[in-house]
Length: 239
Image (cartoon, rainbow, N blue to C red):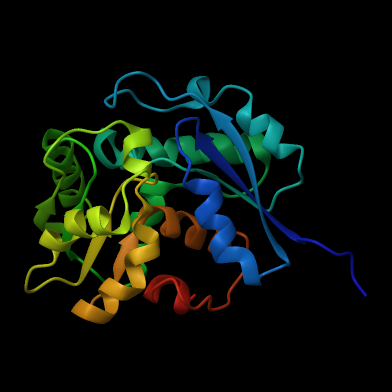
């Protein structure tokens, strides 16, 4: 009998105000005892327009490195509007520091859409419309045609986003489902849309890419883990 517990260790760098990362990841991996999520927290900069780099992450990556990881991720989506290129540079820095492949939530979403051959998308974002417009512009540079955008009526803090119930989350998601889409994307790792993915996929017949689920999907890919994990939508079901 092998050593009990996770043989594959996935490192996740979590913004301090995020309460979804650990709980959603644990729920998805509940039936996968050989896969472990391991976490380190850091404080986001005050402005949504600030770039997240190693100086922002502080000691968090080095502390995770000590756990002998197989892959690591920055569990945040700011690169979706500040620039995917900056996130890919951060991935290279994290890989050099930690010695394992790295991703971010923003990079993972783009890679997930590529894996799903999805280019015509609806966008769900739990923040300001001005930031959603920035995501739309950034995505266009990656061959992604955002044809519908849905944001909440009022701006919320990260803890307020996390406290939204299923009905409120569904109300934010639903307007993004218009005709002619390949997929709908939910950008914002503290929005608990991951729990609603499978239901919306069954209702509308297209994949739903939740940024928190996409982060785990890409971590598994980078760690060399290939297996379906049912119950969480098309992305993980086809992994």
